[in-house]
Image: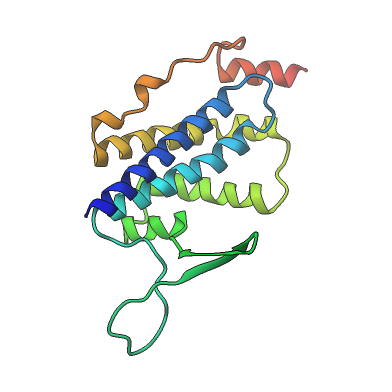
Amino acid sequence: MGREKSIVKQLLKKSIDSAMLAIELYNKPGTFFRTEGFITIMCIAWTSLFHAYFIKNSIKPYYAKKSAGMKRVRYEKIVEHVNGQEFKEYKWWELSTCLKEFYKDDKSNPVRKNLEFVISLRNRIVHRNVPQSEYLDLNVYGECQACLLNFNDFLVGHFGEKHNIGYLLSFSLQLAGSSKMFSMRYKRN
């Protein structure tokens, strides 16, 4: 039990640190890759948060080997060679698998829908070309905000108020009054 508790603690730290980094990147002035960076890093934050949740609840978030007739569940491992050393570890679930395992048949859950949207954008950002950032920033701001609020709600709901990241955040100062005002200014230029 002690090892699992330690892993949960590490995963929570990784999750919270990733979320804070995503927020910092998004709010950093002059950054043109803000939305893409936020989405990519929030996927890391959510994945680590789900892994912590599953381990806390005695569910192993690893891909099982597909073998007929085995009495014990065996898990897939990833083997990497770095500088002459071999590293083996379990192949952990990706975020979309975490959603399927957590929400099961509830395909209409708003948090799940938001994360499915974010995952699809993340995959496009990482594996394909994405149109200019300014357009992406304006069009998915609400989804990014929902992703962050949902993250904090899940974190507090499953791990307690002591993990609430809301107190660490402040409103960022802006030269534009609102996104609508910014959009109008942007269209004029």
